[in-house]
Length: 92
Image (cartoon, rainbow, N blue to C red; front, side, top):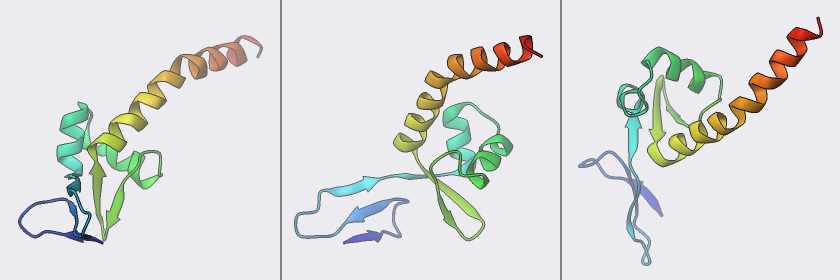
């Protein structure tokens, strides 16, 4: 069973076979600093569900590993998307 621990920001697996912290959840400002982006950009991405997050009221929390993987996936697709956009601009 997953439960929050008031002593740490994160989720813990309290099942008999639990292995401790499952993942640390980062606040929006902290996640933005780790990624090197503006908080406003990350908030917009979260509000539009373009990055993985957990919404707790008006607060967004981010799993660092999931967020990093999602950004890397988007970056890997970016050259293809940019090339496609350039082709469509040339044809108009």
